[in-house]
Image 1 (cartoon, rainbow, N blue to C red):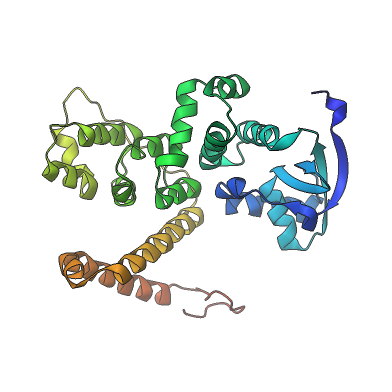
Image 2: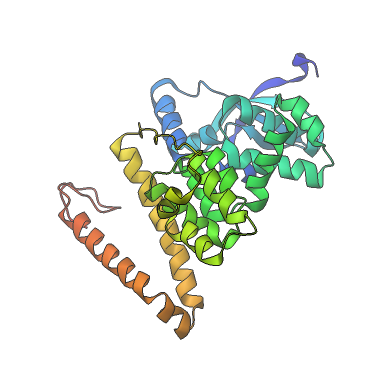
Length: 309
């Protein structure tokens, strides 16, 4: 494709169709960065779009597009790619995602899966396009196909890295969210998770051991072969506000899942989980007290300062 086939233009954001796959990797942190850049310097980073029959579709720049919408900016600068057809546009969006690291691992996995399953693109083609191994392609695809929605959200939030999620995707879907939450709680690294998943999947592993791996992974680690050397967990370099925001988003997501499970549970299910549900109620109660006591806490939607929740 020749470079002069692409054109620069100014387009009303209402005419730009969002891509739900790119939306999976949309980081609120990136949106806020774009908002700051837009407020101080204007729209200096054009979006990249595809065009067909007068309809524009975002290929790169989802975070910037969202920031413009929030700030009330109606028109943005775009590069209109002349990539023809849905398949070529998806391949370009995937390539740009890996270059700009904007879409994230989950979006990349979804693009890869769609291109392979619905558009007949081979892993060899994608490997050549992205400069990645076929193994990398398969692992990214597994994130889209095998990973539960709850864990996908944890990857997007940054609670779990993509490489750790690739290991978690090998577990039964119904066990992934609990295992992932517990590995975060216990500060387990990718090597720890890999070994635990490997042990879980071994035919000779007992159901009791598998249950312990999911519910209390840290207690199982000492039983692993001594040849497995655990790496020291890396220090979390994020600021307190970012860590608090990510933890809060994750907690909200898990609580919604708990509510759905409670609504579907019968009396026997609730009795069986009663011990943990009482712990949950206590944790919610004490957290509510902490929020009310937090100095200067402002309830969402209120403009004043220092008002309790």
